[in-house]
Amino acid sequence: MSLQQQINTDIITAMKAKDDVSLRALRALKSALMIAATAEGAKDSVDDETAVKIFQKLAKQRKESIDIFVSNGREELAVTEREELAVIERYLPKQMSEDEVKAALQLLLAEIGATGAADFSKAMPLAMKALAGKADGKIISSLLKQLLG
Image 1 (cartoon, one colour):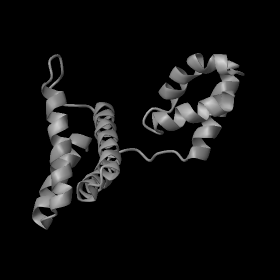
Image 2 (image 1 turned 135 degrees about the horizontal axis):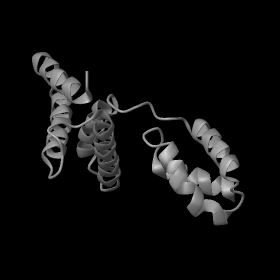
Image 3 (image 1 turned 135 degrees about the vertical axis):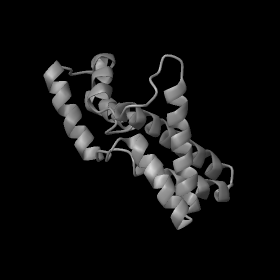
């Protein structure tokens, strides 16, 4: 079952369960998928790889909104965003721990022979491609800077 079909099935389940939180988040996911599917040059459906990228973008938006709401003292709005983020994260691949990311980066650096800070611009795109969907870009960047000194 594709992610798009899974979202549609879960919307029906959330409606039957009267789960407003899940329903709100699932409708946001479905809307983003429909926008991507109807974009110029797109096919009628979205493949799972593209769907995951869309979901990651939505999750990142929720995290940024939470930070803004908390810093502005709007905890009630941050709670709503956290609830939606929890639902979105169910459809994302499991994120690697910081130790796992560090180990993967060390292997990558050994493969390409990167040793110093000057190699950051060569290593970062490779790291982002290798760890796409598995780790946050901020974590990758900070660990890579730390490893390269």
